[in-house]
Length: 343
Image (cartoon, rainbow, N blue to C red; front, side, top):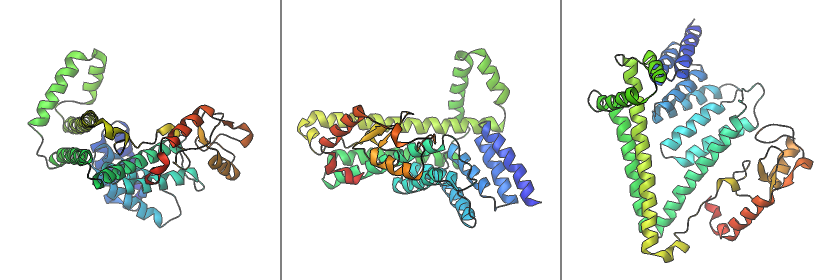
């Protein structure tokens, strides 16, 4: 039976994924899909493997296919939306990523019967929603500065474009096989030297028992590590150069630091993790989580539980968070109300 054969291949893919062999896992999932293409979980699992391999477009396609199959039934598919949001954010589409992340968060917050929700899913998903919202806000802020004819914003935009090109070029070269025997081998030799001479003996033995340097799987492993290192280098270079740019402009014209160059940022600890908006009157739960008072009161009317932990919670157990309230007041008094609409 085709569905049974596909399930067996999916299980092999799951095992390979747990062992960190993401390329092998992707191959098993692909074989499973070729056997039976109506199981949304296989597409979701392959999307997760492709995220690990930084194959963003492939991950998007798999998530959309998984959601298409799920739409024919009644089950929810929060993982597909979550993986879709990750791929969209990596492709620099924060608006779409935020929409997908919010859908995933809402499905976990108000799950359908028999939905499989992990104990930390709500906390993880809400943190990712906030990450997407901050990315969307950063894009809007750069656009605002650019409209003002701001040179710094133009230069930051050029740095961002270069970062995207570098990350995209590494992925493209690896997928086309144009980085292989030469550059990746040199990098792999450097890794081998560091690993053999500087790591303790037991991790070395465990490593070589699992990844033989003569096998194709080890080559795939080295390519994945190579891609991740090059991508990380591009991100670190962008962050460092952007910080240097801010310092240079602040030194050249200190008067602008207090005007339109003033950082527009919403600190994470001031954000209500139900609405993802900055708080005015925070209250704290017995588990140490803080929320906007009115928002949490409304939530407790529907469900007497902590929104993140699902532990039982009543209004009588809430306490005003005076320390956080002072920080919120300072934030709003800094003029945040003039631009918070962009958030």
